[in-house]
Image (cartoon, rainbow, N blue to C red; front, top):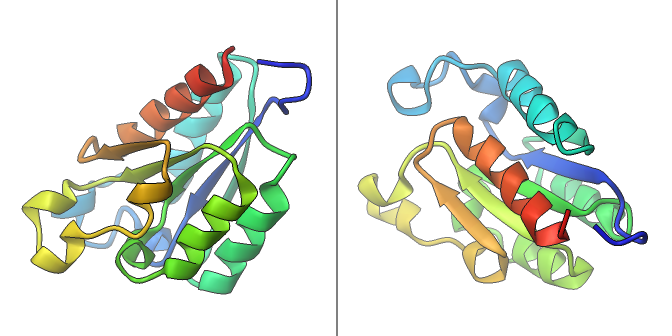
Length: 150
């Protein structure tokens, strides 16, 4: 990690991820968003990083968080939820801030409905983790730390 790179990671979660643990547990598992946050904090702390955590059902809130992250974090782990398949604005924000972003999906979206196969985020993401359950967030943090060079 260079001296200029902040030792913080932003973990963003999009719409409906506040329902983790109760929404379709056969697809998304029984872990809650609080469980995911604890996993992320533990994974990051082991490498000397702090985690900022935000979930929103509102696209504009996520856009503002991405913009505010510029120069403040080493990178972003992002599960955009359904915005994955619809939001050019989020893709443009990621391109604009020039931070590494790891796109994470709990389920294997490629084994699901056809509309879930396309991502506007993937072309601007540094890495993509799909179908690893909530462990995908840990893998995302590990990848960002690797990309940061620490």
